Length: 372
Image (cartoon, rainbow, N blue to C red; front, side):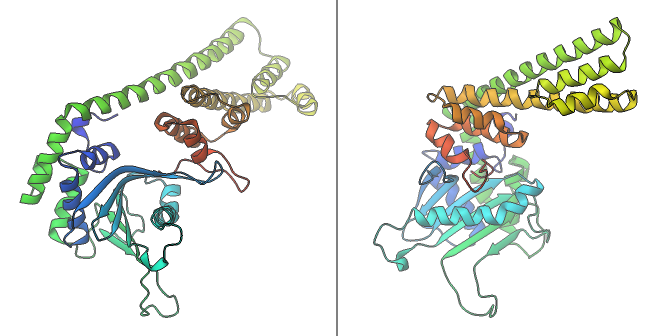
């Protein structure tokens, strides 16, 4: 985990802390927006990490990193994002669509006319190229497929700002900003505006309250990581030690190897009589050794999943009683990235319902914390 002084403006915590700062929040947000959008920005109300919950436990909610409300102007959502995995990149347009939907729903009161719906700009600041064209700016608007020249203004715009993009002749000021955002050090301060932004970033990093908040978050993540590592290591060590002892103290026969395979499989669940008979009947040691290695790998994966699931439950227990159904759902999850998402979400959740509304499955399929 990075030290606070090493963080850059593409890191969620620093962006949140800067824009939430009581002195520098509005000024820093305005400068960043003006560089990206190339226009003057009026007075801003800054709402870091604004959350809209789902309508019920089966509906997905969203937590926006930096929500900005321009006086008599547009609404902005700024999302620093470094999750460049293939699945995350593929889902990015739908993630933007969902954010727009949540923001729109939260800004149109019952009975209000659709014409009063405000313009919304969702801005992703990303360190990976989402579309492979090496552009710094990708601006997305809705339009007519049959007649692209047809004016169609619905007030929705999505901007993907790729910090390393070169194509598209981006403004010099924006190129300087993106370089600074990815590496927020004095060497990358090239303009008076960036000098002012760097001063604000430096002040925020040295702010005692910000440091305490980061230390608390760091200690919490370290405690979770240490607990999971210790549990997994201890269990795997016991398994390895037992296996070495068996290999040293007795001749490995087909019957022994078959029994070991069944033992490993039983730790993950019941073994059918058909599978048991098939394993015990096998006499080819090459086949048995292959089955054994597969079972051992599956068992280690199972132990890791189990430890992570237990960590989620431990975190949720601090928020309130956990139902058996919720516990069963957590322990039934087989995807490690999903469990990692759940650990982070459980750590950030303030109420048990917030966790369940974001992560529990619906009848249509699993919903994970891949979004914010």
